[in-house]
Length: 374
Picture 1: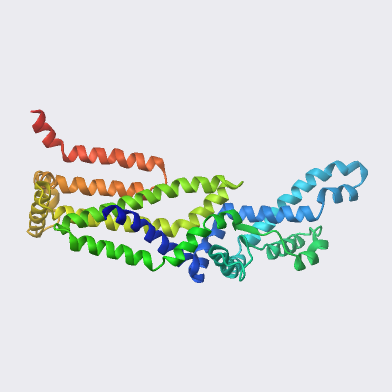
Picture 2: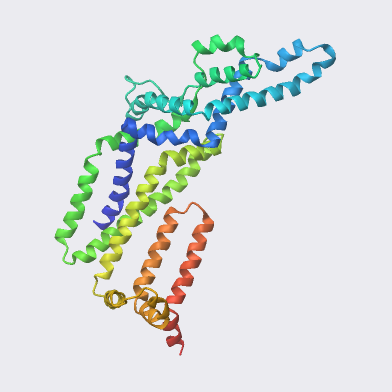
């Protein structure tokens, strides 16, 4: 039963997050909204726009045709300079507040198609990818270039207004269909998973003799399950990034799309750690009993202090209290280190957290180590 709870907790957290984020239009739009603020995404969209402009208008050929014979060699550097100006124009459009509003409106429109694909409903939505059309960006970029005196792209303006441009793909068809089965199953189990998890927990507490120990084991199993889930997400992120040409954009999309899930995993894991710590302190072990006594004595000691500056003058007494509470403090230090490992995105931070944990544990247990060596 403990193992089942360890499996159901991460499944319930993931399923609840996915259904709340994907099926609710407002949550879906707010989840994707920060994506347009990512510099790599803005640059990718600007590059797509410029590529489409230069594909529709053969800039270098036109310049070569119009330049006098002695200066035709300038066509290539002039094309590069024009591309640079076009990129600046497109970036200014993409980074504008107006495009942010357009981005949210487009995501609101594509939300229904995304849910249709994920649910396997091809009748109400035939979209096979989640993308944002770039016609407005193309048109506004041409107008920005016009304001700078660059009118080379004006002939295609009317065509763009009535044609469908190559959009910015947020999630590809392959990625959508990969999770289609899991999403469809999640819709069916959206009510079942939380109820089954609650029944397992209640059943375990009713059937057990030592409820404190059962609570500790169930919370620990849930935390371990969430740690395994986060490890799976780390490997899945690498697969997701490596599956597309632009890994920087893929990394930004992954971070924005899953930041809500990662936060929920970490907060639930922190809650589980607190439950484990409380259940352990209430236990019958000698270390738990000493920790309870030390907490009680420390609280009474703090209440008896009349002036806060007196705390700094009682170094020996503070050391004595720390020694009394070394079991509890060691558990708290381990819990904090564990939580840092969960939330850290850098290997350096993780390594330093273990180093600091080792120093803290050595400092807390220095006196007992000296006694043993003596």
